[in-house]
Image 1 (cartoon, rainbow, N blue to C red):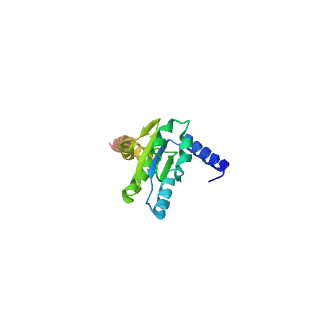
Image 2 (image 1 turned 90 degrees about the horizontal axis):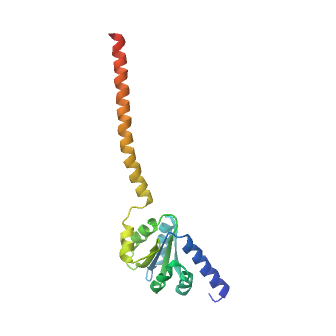
Image 3 (image 1 turned 180 degrees about the vertical axis):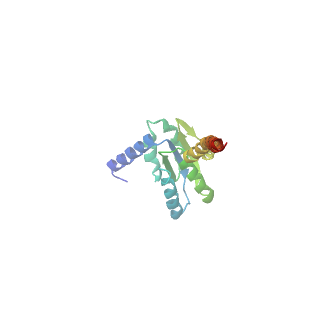
Length: 170
């Protein structure tokens, strides 16, 4: 990328992605096969996020004048940056699932809610249930009492029908 206007457009594009992202994760992708990275891109895209292998100097320029400026010291070697737009936990889970299979894929740092995340915090974040799991838990928690209430109402209806059927016969 020798053309300065292309570099400026690249930095501007990353600044826009940084502004939209709820979570940003930096990882080392050196030694990971292209086919594995393609599979990772697909799984990350399914979470409503995006992963890019970036040019370090331009990513550092994009971090300037943002709260993520502290991430600059983690941008060394081959860097893959993930931008989580919809659910901040889902892309982290997808990355950790991939890292379990591809041992050469390692985490550098992350950023969420104004805080720089080290590898330990990213690991903890990957263990939190995602939006879909939380909605499922909530639905099942709400569904139980509603089902019990419906059974009680149905039992009362049957009892009244039985009482009404016995009353004219007497």
